[in-house]
Length: 200
Image (cartoon, rainbow, N blue to C red; front, top):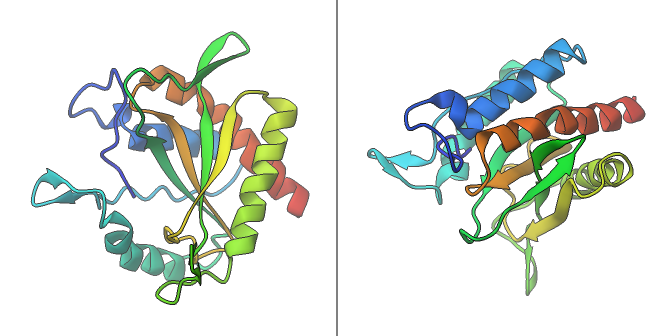
């Protein structure tokens, strides 16, 4: 959804240095190592008239996502890959197997606010999405201590109503390096695989 997100040492204009490049690497691992069929959609939704504009990105992306899922009904898992935005003195990095690795955060929309259920948005898969994130977080705690941060909850739905296993994953933040983000992808791929494999 936010294809223009970059990292501390991203080279301007180099797609491989953006979150899209990180998604390319995740796609390669899931395909080559685990044998999954993966469709990596690279639509640009966080630009308006050439200016960065992230707020309407989910709404702008929705028709294309609906079309993709309609054209590919066998898709079971939807991963929306992001990087977080934090204070410049915050470093979301850990060491795993001697490699500096961006920490992951699972992000879920609840379609609820302080007044209860929101009437303007709904998600029939809310509990399924939360369970998917929780299963990956528990797997991470067992296999890769300190890799994950929290399961972050907000009131919107972030297009997670489209599939029962939808996850918005934050890979580090703007203060991480591209290498740190890339180093997290084999671990994220393993978490995805372990949870999917367990559910078969």
